[in-house]
Length: 483
Ligand code: 2AM
Image (cartoon, rainbow, N blue to C red):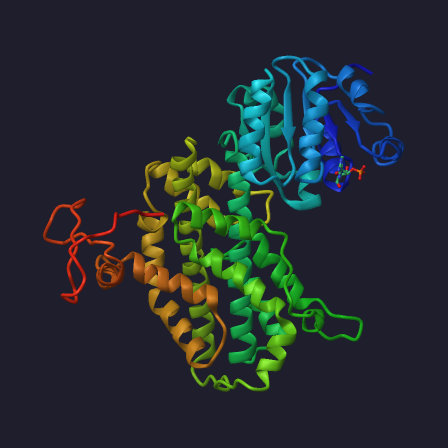
């Protein structure tokens, strides 16, 4: 067999499926795994008869690659990535590329890009989204790292990526060093938000409207045929129709304690670091945390009582209200996600292409949706768009959903139904569109107790004042600073 176009290390399911995907697109792939038996199992099993070269050492792997060599790691995030980088560096030559396709935290990718480049090699840290199925049939791929490496991996990555209906691949260059893994992290955070929003509408349908599973299944089916069309609405439709062995809906029997692997948390931490109000994803992460306190909630439910949900309005109308509330909240969530990326681009010096990011998420990944096509259009129309809420299409959508959205939030709250994401979205909207927030009083309080100073509306920005509020404190102000 001739030499391989790319080498891949790490034959767990994601790694194997990516190899099979590459091979099916005409690329020869050399593979290696720490536990080398897995190499033979794969080459003689799922990889049998294909253009896949099994290798039993890193030396053998490297010797089987066309130059400039490309070696992709699909190993557990963290130390294993650093370990393999250390082992590969002495075996590679200037211009070769190391690619990390795992779920690495972006600060690690920033550090590794610098380190690998210092050794004369190129580095790519790439988000790969879409799970096992996506890896095999076409994932969304979000690469960042050494810009010079992009041209080398582009033909392979764009060939194996998901395609939107006109054939455009869901893979484009994201930006320097950790930008690819950052964007993948935000994708996961947005996924948390979308899922929580759907769960809240489900709870309202079930507990307030008293709908049956069949009715809910039909509503999600209908929603998936309109502007909410997305993978997550589609799987929710199917989940609601799924029956356990006894004919009852399986979802009713699933314990309500959510797990999380940490990428949502990373996104929220990044938002706190950047000072961006990523409130919806924040609530979605905390919602999982609250759900996980199952025993405590069950105990509290016997002591803390609220209203008994009761709905006597027009159900059909309210279901349409719910649909609009979900759509409007989703707009806020994505607006916040893009605000975070815009700030991170400034903080880390990335030149992000926001329309390109929407396109990468349009297919292949968990948050794929028709909606992302609209976001792509918004950034195509105005690449400098400061906020998604200010785009004419989304502005019209949110304004025309507003009444429904307020009805849903106020009705749910009056009836004691937990809606952290739907309500924070509306609250953000009301804060963002308000030119005068009560932070004037907040600044007064800060100046009162800590002499932190304030700016005045009747003076230019940047001039700071201190008042001796009690007549007791001195006129000394503390220095102004912002974290
Ligand atoms: P293994 O098959 O030898 O366990 C997903 O777990 C992939 O990451 C697998 O290919 C696994 O290799 C690899 N992996 C996990 N921990 C590793 C480590 N500490 N060093 C090298 N590879 C590791």
